[in-house]
Amino acid sequence: MARHEFGAGIADFVVTPSDGLWAVGAGANVIFWDAAEDGVQYTDLQDASGAPMTSVRADEYGALHRFYGPDGVTGMWADAGGLSRAWIEAHDLPTSGGGTSPGSLDWLNIRDDFGAAGDGVTDDAPAIQAAIDAASAAGGGTLYVPAGRYILNAALTWASGVNAIGAGDRVSILQATNQNLDLITGTDISNVTLQGLQLSGPGRGFGSGVRFTRFAAPSTPNITLRDVLIQSMGGDGVFCHQLASSVLHRVRVRSCGGIGFHLQAPQDTVLGGASTSLIGCSAEGNVVAGYWLDRMSYTTLTACAAQGSPTGFRLDTCTAVSLTGCGAEQCTTGLTVYGGKGPSVNGFATEASDGTSVWLTNSAAGVVLLGVTEVAPVAAATACLRTDAGTIATVLGLTAVKANTLNGTVNRLDPGDGSLVLAGKTIIPTGGAAARMGTAVLVAGQVTVNTTAVGANSNVQLTTQTPGGTVGAPYVNARVAGTSFTIKSTSASDTSTVGWRILDPS
Image (cartoon, rainbow, N blue to C red; front, side, top):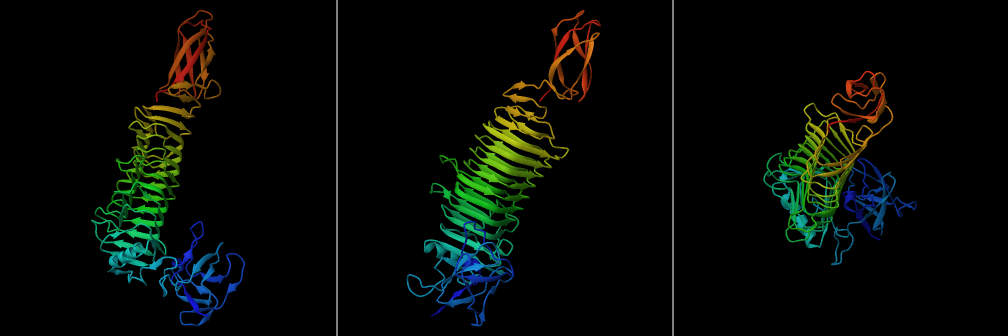
């Protein structure tokens, strides 16, 4: 029986498990089995020269060089010492048209099959574009990008159903040289995965790393970016029109001249972009903003970070967009909610802000802020939470260092003094060391009230509840901020019961 050919990069022919994370480490020793669990190990292997061997060792990039499996075996389970095995198929299987081709899984090697050099010198744009066009003509397929630096003097025009998977974002590098062009671009496309790649720009100009636009199609659906590093583009790192049903997972955008992640829904659409998730993404040192979502709906950002931009996160006229476990460091404004309805934030931290940590404006409605924490703002920072007139928000568990500027309608639970503020109505605690309301009995015309709630600028309101002795007019005679205040009457023989209430400016 014939031996079939395997290898030339295990990523070429792996059917990944459901988590999509199976990979081979550099220098790993890989053995092969006839079952996903237990089973019989295949030991009758041969290297490219025909010499016998029992296992295959990965190179410094985690790739497997070509080898031959046992007689008649067309697929095997690969075990690289991890918790699971991955299926690989021979790439010399017969095609429907006769002959053999690396097409049983629609994987095309841009170097072996299309002549890309990856040497950091040759213009590889024509070779890679030919691979994209070939996969598109076949109805879709996957391009394998082996380790190397692939110079691109022209933009790559992507197509629906075409995927690209590299050996990792440190080693499979697409390097754009034209400052006026995007690196990867496409219009009205869908069903695209980019994984394990680095997209690097010339460090100037206005080209984006990935730019997918919508013209005639109703949306740009089923786009997946995973384990991708985008850096030094003159424009945005990622720009997508009306992204829908898509995932950006562990995508890092740094040092771009525009916005890190710019997701925009054109105004001529009904619902806008929707049903998209950003998970574990990072935007670092981008000139305009880290994340800018414009008219997006039903979209989530989880464990995402922004650093060193004027705006960390901006939600512009969005609907039901949520941030969970996200944060902004060294940004002038950590989060801006500009209009829209129903955005929610659960666990958001700003650190070293030099402006406003969270800013709600342009009649943003139904905003829910849960567990927002301001950490070490710089001296010039102006506010922790700023709400402009016309905005409506509910705030729970706000930890502020700078003062808040609240001009909108804000329902606050636990604003820091134990009180509850619901749409302008304040429910004030009356007991304990931080009481803000209570009664006190005058003795010889005066009494000291101990409460940590009183401040240097507090407004203490007094009324006579029960007259006693020779009644006079009560007034605040002295105060110690954070400790106590003294009530005194104009009559030294006043023994009335006096009601008091502390109010503070917002």
